[in-house]
Length: 187
Image 1 (tube, rainbow, N blue to C red):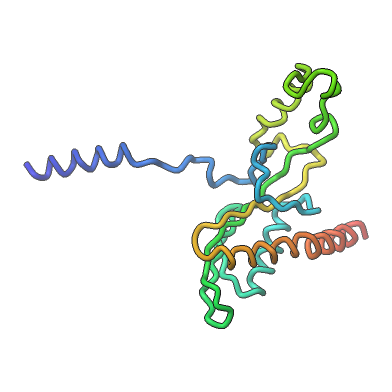
Image 2 (cartoon, helix red, strand yellow):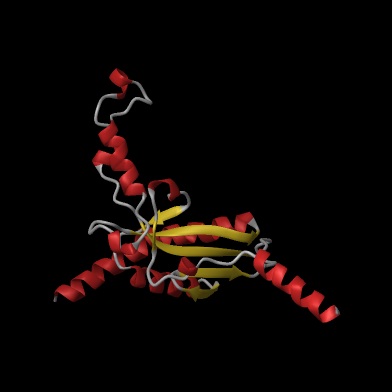
C-alpha cells in the first residue's frame, strides 16, 4: 500500500518538476536579438571557439577557476582576506551579436514630422524580422562575437572587478590576438 503511494507521489513530483530545454546545450553560440544586449561585451573576433579559448586561458592566469559547458564558462572566485572582498560566482556566455545597421537604428521618416510612435510599417517590419533570429545558421557575415556576463551569487564588488578584467581583455587582448591570427593565416 505504501509503495503504491510513494510511486504515485514520485510520478506527480516528476511531472511537476521543470525541465531544462533540449537546446540549452547547443552546438553553437546563441544569436542575441536587439533586446538582449544588456551586460554584453563586444569583441573584434568572428570565431567563437577562439574567443572562448582565449577567455578561459586569461581567467586561469588571473586565478579564477572556470568550468566550460558548451559555449558557457562558469567561474568561481574564492573569498580573499587580503582584499577584504568576498567570493563570487559568475557565468560568461559566448554569443553572436545581431548586425545593427543604419536601417535598423534610424527610422525611415523623420520623427519630428510623424511623431515618435508613428513609424512607417516597412521600418518596423525590418526591425522585427531581425529580432526573430535565434539560430546560428542565420548569422550574417558581418556578425561579431560577444560575451554575455551574469553574476550568479556572491559579492557584487568582486563581480565588478571580474567584469572589468573581462572588458579589458576583450578590448585589448582579443583584438591583438585576432589580428595576429589573421596575419598568420594569410602567410
